[in-house]
Length: 311
Image (tube, rainbow, N blue to C red; front, side, top):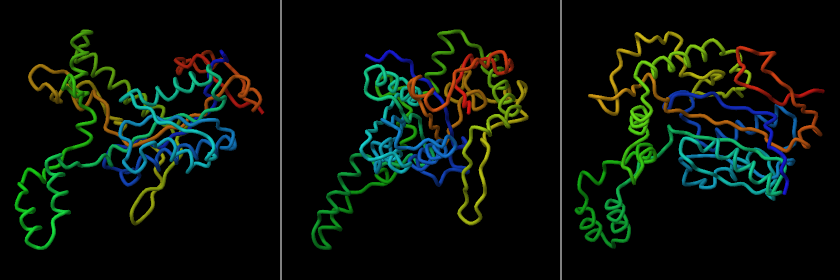
C-alpha cells in the first residue's frame, strides 16, 4: 500500500458570485470546466497526467449526472481516465480531496484532479409526482376528446413548482433545513448571536482586505448576454459590514428565538474550484517543493506548509 500523503500543489477557481447574479447563466459543468482549464493553463501540466478526477457536487444536473466525468472530458483529460462525483452536502468538495487521498493510499492513482462545483442559480423547479402522472396521461391520450378529458384532471396546485434548492438543503429524515441545523448547533455549542455576527464581520472585512490575494487564485470569467464583462472578483463581499449593521437583521429560520440571519449565514452561491493533488514524489518530479510559509506570511499563518513551484 502506498502510504504517501496527498499534497495539493496548485489550484484555481471561478469567482464566487451570488446566485441569480453574474454567473447565473453558467451551469455547474461549465463552472467546473472553467476552473479545471484554468488550473491546467496556469501550471502548464498536461491534462493527460491526471489518473482520476473527483469532483463534489450537491445538485448534479440531470444531463450530467456524473458531473466529474463531463468536467474532466471538457477540460482535456483523456477519456480513458476514470472520474467520479461525490456528494456530502456542504462538505462535497472536501470529500473529493479525501477520496483522492484514499485512492492514492490504495495505489489507485498518483495524480488527481479534484474540486467542487455548484450552480445554485440553475437548480431546477420540479413538478410534483401527481402532476407528472397527469402529464404522462395527457401525452398518451388519443384524439382531441381524450386529450381534453386528460387536461381537465389538472388542478392549479399541479403547476406550483417544487424548489429543488430548498428540497436539496432539507434533510428528509429530520425534516429540517441547513439554516435550522445551524440554529440547532448554535444552541448545542452555546454560540451566541454576537459571536456569530463578529465572525461574519471579520470574514467580510478580511475578504475585502485581501481581495488582491484572492484575485490571484481566481480564473476570471466573461459574463453578459449583450456586452461581455470580465468577472475577476467575488461579488458577495461587503466592505461596509459592521456588528451594528448585522445586529439590525432579523433571524430567518426561527424568527422569535433564532440567531441565524442573512448577515451571519452563508451566501447562496455559484462557483467552482479545481485542485491538482498528487503524491510527494510526483510533485517533486514536476519541480514543486515543500516549504514553510508560517514565518514568511504571519498574517496568513493558518497555512502551516505548502508546495510551491521552484524552477
